[in-house]
Image (cartoon, rainbow, N blue to C red; front, side):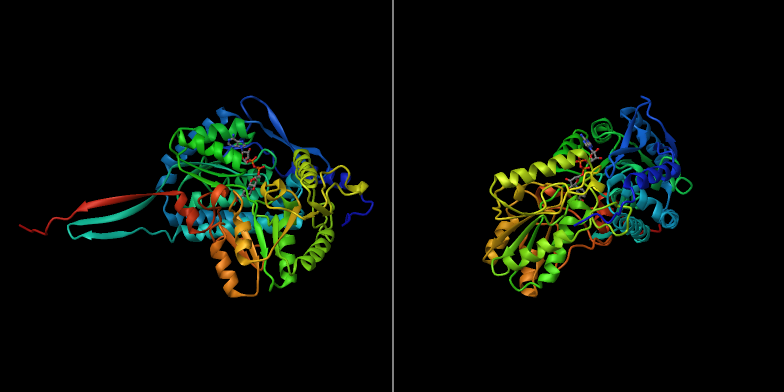
Length: 507
Ligand code: NAD
């Protein structure tokens, strides 16, 4: 577990990278086909967590820009967007895909600098985002409705219609991917969108929509930058926003749902998780260790569906734990722009504080810290919010470290002895986003996949996330889905049309 960087200064590499980022674009709020400043004249800086320095100032918008963006979106919808055919929208989405394909490296750099994730991971996520847009470009033309043969004298058919203008809010942790998950289905279904990215990582979203400037009519896609309370609040409360889709924490999600309820706008909520990974006694431990390590340490543990709770059968617990600690200690912490780096820093000082506090809480609760638990002892990394991969054992399920979303590289290991106990402990959480299983038995795999309360179940792996498969949480982890045909449905409302058919009469 060491820095991949030699004495080359991370600080000077990042100074150069910030310069390159600033050359990419001016990064305003994107409203009605152009970059605009906030009426207040205020800006908010995005920060690079590797060196804890500001990168770019973006407009600190408020309800004035939200109003302006919603108006622009309705104007675009009414003027021409609502008349487009699915085939036309499909062609435009494919055009966007083709432009984005020429900017993968640039978008990966923006996401890496903005969030601290290894650039190699960011590249894969940008490619995933492009794949999602390509999927919805394909799906757009396949949209069909129904004819309902209820009676001979009434011809009944359904129409799927867009909501008009939708409001979308994304979290900081997967900026490009999250934007594609929201915009792809919304546009394919025929909506205009106003999207608010996280104030911590807005750069790639702004650049993505700027790259679509010559593709979609002005006002069809808008991005309003700023804080959650100043932009997210007014967007979800806006009377003219007909549908809200939110990805983020449970606490903010509840707030969003209440705000949307005030004007009866439907919501899709993709919220947090505390996902169990159950290692059964017949598991292939190589696969299990690999899946759990990737599942908790990818993105420095800042992943909603991360396998933060390993539940391991008592017969294999000792061996699993030894191998897992080795896997944790093999991560290469370093400059995310270095292709050898496998773990970057946490995204902010606040997140570093939170994760440090949970480590203390875990120790106070009586769990045993096996490795990690603090910032690495490496002067090269001292400026960033780095945190060592951390593993706790002797964990009870009622401990806070086993129940609360830490959003950092902290794994808890618990043991079980029977199938029933494994399922009970796996389900003993308010969350229900994802779960994993390691077993070589199809009987165990399919039964456990059915018995665990989660919206996603991975057997013998972590990921992949594919655009075709719906993604969403049970219980407090959310409502509805991103991805798949399900997400397209969330952006359409269904109308039944009844046409009276009298008997044919030529007299
Ligand atoms: P967050 O809830 O703090 O913020 C999410 C977004 O909501 C940001 O854009 C933020 O500015 C905005 N926001 C904040 N206050 C708001 C308000 N009052 N009204 C409207 N919008 C407001 O989450 P985060 O720290 O950006 O992301 C981490 C969280 O997101 C974790 O809980 C993680 O599990 C979750 N997440 C879930 C998924 C999923 O698909 N289920 C994916 C990624 C992240």
